[in-house]
Figure 1 (tube, rainbow, N blue to C red):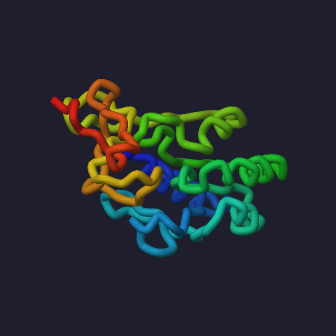
Figure 2 (figure 1 turned 90 degrees about the vertical axis):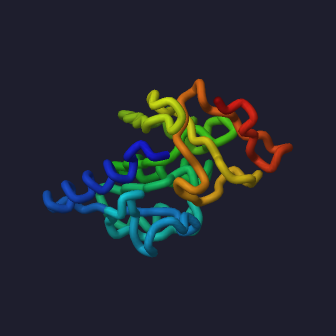
Length: 180
């Protein structure tokens, strides 16, 4: 989180739209942080998007677009893998963005599977909220044992590997005991 993923997607969407390419932007409906019908950065920049309830709806929502962009793909979990494969088999370009590691420090589905079929991968890093080093993790700041809880800076902060404290399910999903 807070690494500029959605900012980069919006820049790409704007560039593709200016070039006249056929594209469709999708987002999970259960990500309630953005305005309905759009993807949005923490700073407020946005681009229109189609909300998708479940991963098995991705192909239909993509329509006949040559380029399909999916923001926050981890919200769909493993259910995003087959639709992405189907779009690729149909000759479409698929671009996804999301959080690769959860607050427990474990890989987020669908990334282990999607990384195997990706033509290219661009990993972004934010800045650790504790020490300023490059962040590779998302620290949950609120108690919640669910793997996905939509939230912003009130709920999460970027952390480097040294400052990151994996959440513990037995403590309401968080354990901040090691913080400096």
